[in-house]
Length: 480
Image 1 (cartoon, one colour):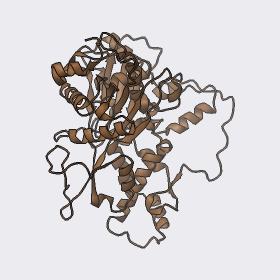
Image 2 (cartoon, one colour):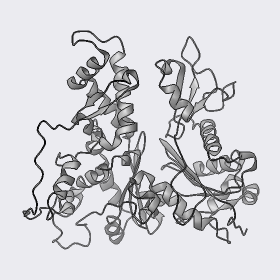
Image 3 (cartoon, one colour):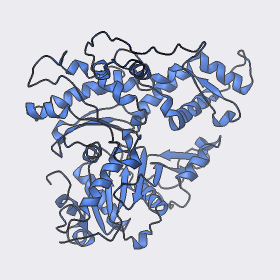
Image 4 (cartoon, one colour):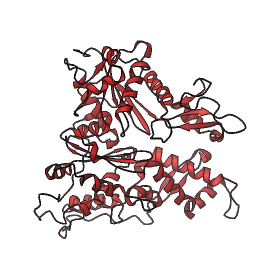
């Protein structure tokens, strides 16, 4: 059926496991998201046994969602000391071994539409949906059902996260590494086709990194001293049950949510990335590319000297946590260990760079495709907020590359190119690549909803005729 939504501003909705980004309408400058919220909600616990007093998120409860909290309401409630005793936080877009929480997903997305000032009962806006990375055909159909029946959209296009990310980063082929909450995915894209047979996964994500840092901070003598000073106690005064654990959790939350830019990722040689950047900034002949891939660079001839370090300068930051809002707590270089589980693996599990190696060595790729994808590596997900993570990660890929670019080869790459959002996207300039899926969705929406042939989106008429399976007949970049 012919379709044209030229006069209807589309809604762009990037739904990730941790964060949801949304915006209404697009323009030549591609606006940044107008709504960004945590992809979570909370339900009250019953008194006495700690069980949830209402629906369990699977539609099996006896009460409505009237007392659930989401968005700013949840953020405000979380600052209360007794929050965990009163509320259970759920992340419905994360992968789960239990039944998927579609009730929770609907609840959060309806809240997002309210924030966008869209009335679901009279929704004029077609939806460009970029769902979480692992998306099966069954999940696509269920998202389609949710969009038409619960969000009342007039039209829908679903764009895969790897493809949306790659488009925003200015490439058609490449490797997209999505770091989720509980797992990380490595996706291969060749000429706008996501090669699902090449996808690799590791059961390590952001939650494991945060838990790793929490364990280190609990035994960190320097932080223990800082927390004791903040509460005005001496070194000999013992912690009450659970007190230190609660304070360390506050430190982790503030560090990640408000100070991610102050966290650096270590390179494969153990250096912290800011030291690599400083070396490049103070030496005009320093070859950053060779440094990152581990290739031997000629001895540099500095043109200007690095400034002498300030006496007593240390790698620390100061933060305030809710329990001691009027005081500051100093965190040292231990914060840079946050990314270690991804870069080095945990408990003998495969690391992220080893998963990349397994993906690019997939037998489904021909040598020319395998060489081409190394020219476009993109890192997305919340970990991309740490701007040094992607450059540091590239250094771990050096065992998969030739030892020197001077060695000719048609089957093994000599270098890897890291992608970033081009500067000509003015509203995204300077942003980390965690914004790439939303930008890619905006770019595609401009085309998909102006296509008179209706090949790249489905309408209510299509949905009424074919049901949720109608989404299988429309797509961007992939053969359906």
